[in-house]
Image (cartoon, rainbow, N blue to C red; front, side):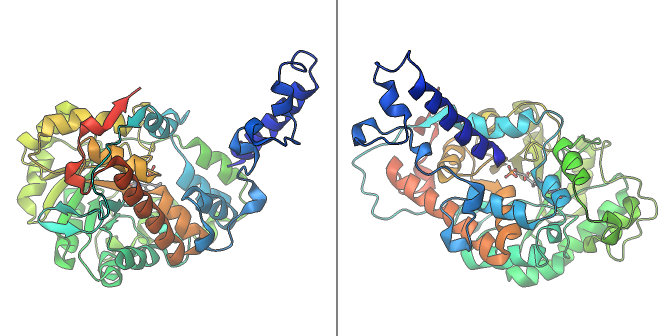
Amino acid sequence: MTDQVDNATSRRQFLRFLAASPVVACTGLAARAGESVSSPANLPDPVNWRALLTQDLIRNPAEAINVFDFELVARKNVSPGHFGYMASGIDDEVTLRANREAFAKLQLRPRRLNDVTKVETTTELFGVKWPTPIVIAPTGGNRAYHQDGDLAVARAAKARGHLQILSTVASTSVEDVIQARAAPIWFQLYATQKWEITQALVRRAEAAGCPVLVLTVDRKAGRNQETFLRLRRTDSQECSGCHEPGLKGLVRMKPNFDGIDVSSLTTLESPNLTWDFVNRLKDTTRMKVVLKGILTAEDAKLSVDNGVDGIIVSNHGGRAEDSGLPTIDCLPEVSKAVAGRIPVLVDSGFRRGTDVIKGLALGAQAICIGRPYLWGLGAFGEPGVERVLEILHTELEVGMKQCGVRSIAELSPAFVHRV
Ligand SMILES: Cc1cc2nc3c(=O)[nH]c(=O)nc-3n(C[C@H](O)[C@H](O)[C@H](O)COP(=O)(O)O)c2cc1C
């Protein structure tokens, strides 16, 4: 956030330096460098005309021009510790940045002279048609950003027809979120290391009516969330005011565990997951089983061989390991290995309609988003989430028209050029 402000400031200082420099005084650059440019032919980079500044915070969702506008407001509203938890990557945050930077290395190849007066954004997952391929990724602890938490997200998803995936460690129970969404949602499973707890969570999700179980397979060890740890130090709030200390205290705040005996629980991470576990899980439930966190062709092939019903190509939004591997670059090899036999979804770093188009073109049936809707939630609650979804969907429709495609099925890798 402050980077943008700092960049704009230092750029202006640099341009002033150029304007004053005798070296460039007679080269024409000086005319560009001053801020009193009068001829349109000499306009400098547009960022100098209206850079995003912290004093320009949007006052309501309607004022937002893009999803990033919500991040600044969420940063102001949400306590530093909670905001830092949301924003954080791991270690040097190479993966976090790579998730975004990778999109800039992929260019779209738009086609012309197709009638795109009407575009169809419908996608189908396990026989259910969704009006949009943009999916709400599971995120835990959403009441940290707004008191209405997952309920606000569910109502926004309902208003705009989005599929929602609910986290095991959501702030609200799966039953209450289904009621607010007024439609089935998918349940994300942190299996823990205790089969009895896994089984109880699975039974609960199934009884609540979830058709799909999303097993997260990329959280196997602890993690060094540096942005979170540093911002938490600046937070004057007393954590113990809201959080009971330790794992048991944490789990007590997570209603999906209500009524489940968690006395044997020592961690929420699952270093013991294997393909045998996946098979056992499949034998335990009628729900479709989707693996979240697959990044390689090898694991994609094993997923199909083991009867997995779907894959989410994900690096947890740069919050698992700091591999440096962006998911949009993993997607082609996973799509190729799967060869259309099971649906592939993708997440991590999707912020623009054109990002969504690149994901769909490279083989995903749907794109999950995490932080953008949390920015909307932290900024304005339910209307903020709804506007984030509206912006992304509008950008998607506009992008599809510009690419000359009328449906998601028309997108293919031929629409993407790698720089
Ligand atoms: C604050 C936060 C909490 C998250 N909690 C979970 C979770 O409980 N379970 C899970 O599978 N993924 C979780 N994720 C990862 C998301 O499901 C998703 O993979 C990621 O946010 C996508 O990247 P993006 O934030 O860049 O869109 C979380 C992500 C964030 C930002």
